[in-house]
Image 1 (cartoon, rainbow, N blue to C red):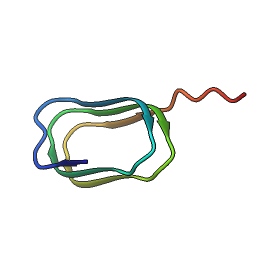
Image 2 (spheres, helix red, strand yellow):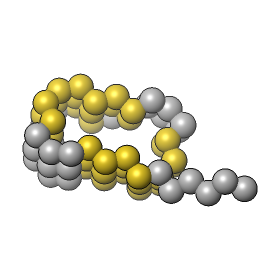
Image 3 (cartoon, helix red, strand yellow):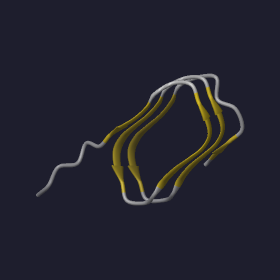
Image 4 (cartoon, rainbow, N blue to C red):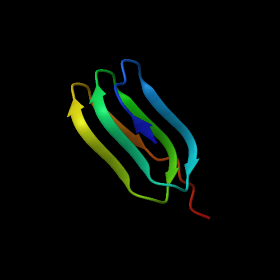
Length: 59
């Protein structure tokens, strides 16, 4: 969980089994790479794109 201001890119790589919550201002891109099994919540001002790039392999 990230609360506050992010002036640098926030990157998530891997699997997220817990809610990812971003509260504050994002002046840089937020990138999610991997599997997300829980809701991803973004609250605040986004001045840059938010990317969701799941790398899920279905077996």
